[in-house]
Image (cartoon, rainbow, N blue to C red):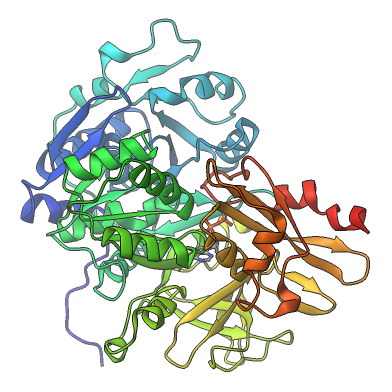
Length: 547
Ligand code: ADP
């Protein structure tokens, strides 16, 4: 017998309709590429999104077609999030930090029809416009006054002209919730980038999930500043969650340096933020150097790579900011787990509590996970045994766009598919998952595994270390041994011997790195993560040379 409740498809447009109706006067503040601060309300943003939806139809965009963006976090980008997906087309957020050859590859692969871009990226657009095969129209996300005078880009349109040319009398279409809504490509650190195609249903369910108190805990009382870019897995879902909850949103535009971010946090009374660890390094360095405090910011979500416990401690003890460590991936929309405490942790000492918060956390309802051994056998949740982490759930990929790479799922005994994350993890009896490494970064020393993240976290706890990466270096006797690549804090004195001595008593002796290389900077990828493959190419033979 079926239940007798309404069938209402879960559509992205419903989030904006809700925000307009129930939080119409809530603000969306953006630092624009033009340099000024722009303010609007959800009511205005919703009306402009409807006008843009009409404009897309006049550009000939059909349901299911891909509309690309190359843009920073800002209100115009948010309007496209809703106008494109809401009208049945697919929003494809391109990452402008990728090499132009990659951008061309991805735009062609996605068969993008229209490309919207921030003026910062005009040189990139001019370079790729003659090369991309399917993009017929380019739209500069600015007003008439700021349009380029003599651009080489043919068919260049102006965002504000498109908005002005249409009124806001538009009803969002209702369609199957399983229709595609947006498309993100994985970074392609191994092989070509692959497309992850989200649906309206997966996006709305993910939004419910991440907004929960035991996940990112978003509310109408929050002012959220997503530092994580809208081209990095949809800013981890925050532009959707903010509409669902009616939170004030603050978009930083291109200014992601410590000073610009700090000023915006203070001016807009931001309560919550989110970003990768490398961004917070810049912010913390700025506030430390200038003796500043955060007057309203109390929580920040850190994910994308492991957050060093030393950074969590600094945020909490120095600035009264709680770090919420979260884990996920593009293939998971992206959020899978968050390190939120349980009631039973109330009596823990600060050190014990921080140890729980330093794990990647517990699953958000909707996601299931397990760890498996070399033969696919499920491993115990004892917090000690590590294995490959597999996940399943309604916002986790079942297949890459265009079937790239074949079937990615691994079936279990009941025939249900699990997605292998490529991460190596332990899970404890309370369900807290702890990533020891990505399988491709694990250091295999004499047949035993050494987790590079633990070693990086120890190095990062040294007061003279600004950034640390640990890689597997080839070794004549042990196959691989850990090699530490370190950036010192400005003006800090630190020798190899001092740093290696710092590991004593903090880790099994045989895990201690064999050597330290001091460098000026560690290369970062398009989403701000350390490019360990590049470091391996450069320093992978270092220990062989040393004998
Ligand atoms: P990629 O970096 O492959 O482009 P993603 O941005 O989807 O793609 O990154 C997903 C990966 O990032 C995860 O599989 C994991 O290795 C790493 N990651 C994400 N969050 C964390 C975290 N909190 N701690 C450790 N690793 C993380």
